[in-house]
Image (cartoon, rainbow, N blue to C red):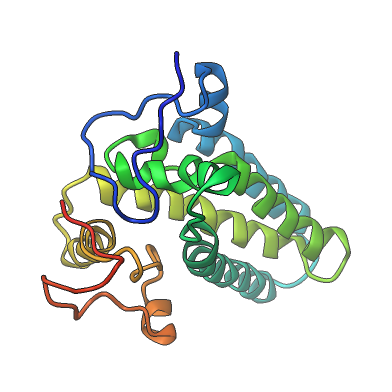
Length: 222
């Protein structure tokens, strides 16, 4: 299959329905860059289980729970800053622009493509693997911290998928879906905390109180 030309540079692309075409020219490679949600669950659930199992007996129950919570909280910061700084850093041309489109730009162009709603292994594997190695492999933190971090990542991915493809009945879920849809269709320079929008409030990027008509280069129209 021929490679698709990126339809957007920055935030100017049109939102498209259906599934996105391959962006690298080879379907097999595209399937490695953008994986099915079930594949993500199959990859990272054993990581969580192994981290929990190896952590058994390292500390008391409350201490382990505290370290797991710390790992989860650290993930939410990774989610916010990774989304804001990495995924929304948009070079105008060249390899950087191409890489941005593959990793995140295509998700904004095809927001209903489930495989593009899952973080690419190009990012998820280094983030999870690097965190576990740096914190636990070097002996600085208990391995349960890595379990909390990985759990945070996996729940974020599934939460993001849910917000795009479900119709929440719960009031909280409807509110969170509304925030994320504003990020997609109104202003993609705000609203970076998908599962943890409280970081947007803290760091001044909340999209919760914006009017429907917002001026600025980050605007998008549905």
